[in-house]
Image (cartoon, rainbow, N blue to C red):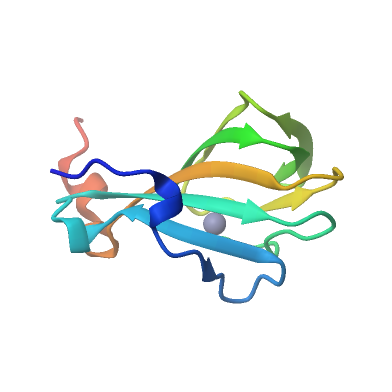
Length: 122
Ligand SMILES: [Zn+2]
């Protein structure tokens, strides 16, 4: 069990994304068996690189404005926006506002690769 203010969790510089920090607020280190919750802070003019991977992102925007690009299509995002990025879809989050873009991003633990395919109902 864990109850805390997300700001108590250390903000780490995100790999390969200048101007972006990530807080792993719930992770395997907390005993979470399947999913991690991360809080991203993206500074104005910055964002993630265009990238893809097998796992999905489940995103909820807490503050700021920006753009999410998925499979070549861009959509505006702001406080309250929910984004589902399926696995293996190229994507990018960019802060195009004047304030920090902050969002929750849920991901499965890496050992779950291939588990969904194995257990998906026919
Ligand atoms: Zn991603």
